[in-house]
Image 1 (cartoon, rainbow, N blue to C red):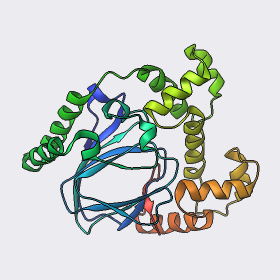
Image 2 (cartoon, rainbow, N blue to C red):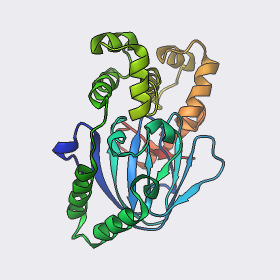
Image 3 (cartoon, rainbow, N blue to C red):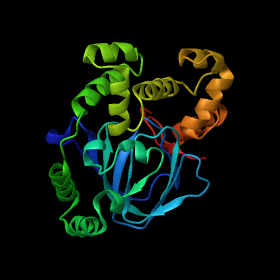
Length: 274
């Protein structure tokens, strides 16, 4: 179950409620993505960046815009409410610059404090059904929303990057906004955690990979060129970084996913981790 509350629609894609058995025990969540999870069931685990081990999260976490794939390990039964943010969405709810959390999930206690998180989780657990839970979460977000310097600038420029799948010159964004590239970079790192160039690169990669048709033979050199890479080796390195998989393994998993979920249109992640 999910919903998009109007007061926050410039910052989030949706609020969601999740309960039951996940389709796979381990899922990959590559960028562009940012989210907040309030866990109400058994702990889940995350491996992000270059981490070798999955780290356990009992109460929940906040993930800002990552630069590489994340792996989520779910218990056999999971229960949580959460937020799928736009890349600039977490910024107004954080007590620190988003760059400090780049590729490092924060616990809810780090972000909102232990007593406040415990009280919120108790209220959510006692709520009368998923709709009431999402309403409580919406009210909490609205209450915590703070004025953030540069948010309009970043959200406007970020929206153009998202709408064009990264196919926009960053110089055009700075010229349209009437600011220097240094100022735009600084604001992006404070609110999103990455530079505009990095965000655009991530959107370009995601659009390219999601457009791959696993049912037909794939010319990887053509895919690499379409994504703007000078050579296939560089593309392969970025592919593994962004997805956690080699190109060949990614296609195998896509094919398996489509066999197991016939008729599903894949327009985003997550995918099985193996």
